[in-house]
Amino acid sequence: MQPIIIVLIILVVLVFIALIKTIQVIPQASAAIVERFGRYTRTLNAGLNIVVPFIDSIRNRIDLREQVVPFPPQPVITQDNLVVNIDTVIYYQVTDARAATYEVASYIQAIEQLTVTTLRNIIGGMDLERTLTSREEINAALRGVLDEATGKWGIRVNRVELKAIEPPTSIQDSMEKQMRADRDKRAAILTAEGIRQSQILTAEGEKQSAILKAEGEAKAAALRAEGEAQAIRTVFESIHAGDPDQKLLSYQYLQMLPKIAEGDANKLWIVPSEIGDALKGLSGAIGNFGPMGGGSAPAGVPAQSSAPTERREQPPLD
Image (tube, rainbow, N blue to C red; front, side, top):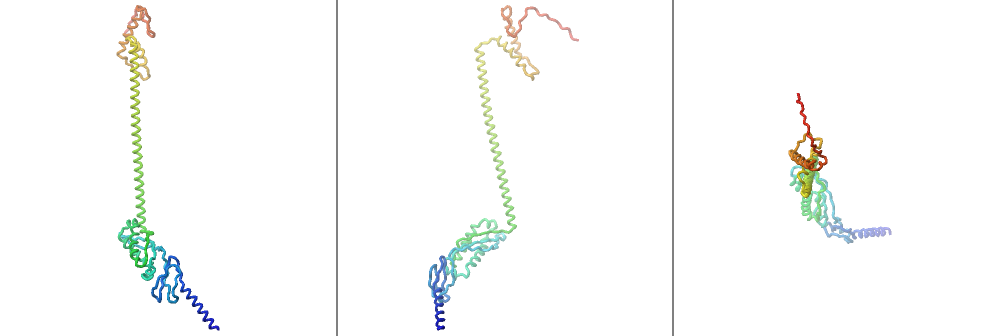
C-alpha cells in the first residue's frame, strides 16, 4: 500500500504544479512572452490566461507603462574644444513586447549608448554659449533621433530632457565674472538714466516755475500800472474839476519842498529851477492879501512889514 500512496502523492503534486503552470495571471499594463519549445508562440495580455504546462514557458514579463531612466553624466566636446558634462533623462514606453524582447538584447543599454553618441554629434556642432542656451533645440534633435532608432525595437521615446550641463570650472568662473560685469554695467546705465531723467524733470519744473512766476510778475506789473494810471487820471480829473490857479499851485509846491529833503541819505539837496516861479507866484499872492488888499497872510506865511529893512554891511575879513 505504501508505494501506491507515494505514487498518488506524486501525482497530486504534479497535478497541482500543472495547474499552477497552466493558469497565468498577467497584471494590468503588463505583457508576457510565451515560448513553446524555445520558439515564440504568443503574447499574454493583462488578465487570466491558460498555457500548456511543461510545454509553454514564460520568456519575459514586460511593463508597458512609461518608464523614466536617468543616465549618468557624459563628457561631450563642443565645437570650441571645451569638455562639458551632460546629464540626460529619457522617458520611454514599450509599445511592442515581442520586438522589445527579440529585436534587441537590452533596450535600456541600447538607448543609453544611442543617447551618448547622438549627444556628441549634436554638441560637436555647437559652441559652449549656444550649448548652454539651446536646451530645447538639443532635446528636440535628440528625441527625433532616438524615436526613429528605437521604433523597430518596440520602444517609443516620449521625452528627452537635459538635466544638467556642466562646463569646466575655469569657464564657470569666467562666465560668473562676465555676468557680474554685465549686471554692474546695466546697474550703472540704469542709475545714469535715472539721474538724467531726474535732472530733466527738475529743469522742466524750474523752467515752468520761472515762466509762471514771470507771467505773474508781468500781470502784477500791468495791474499796478493800470492802478497808477487810474489814480493819476482820477487826481487829474479832480484837479481839473477844481480849477486851481497859479497861486494855489505855487503854495502847494512850497509845502512839498520839506518832504523832498527828508531822509538821512540826502546829503546834497539841489534846488529846482522852478522854485523861482513858485516864489514869484507866492509873493504876488501875499501882496494881494496885504494891508492894501485888506486881508491877512495865509497860515504859515509871515506877514510883510511896511517898515524899511536896515541894511548893515559886514566888515571885510582879514
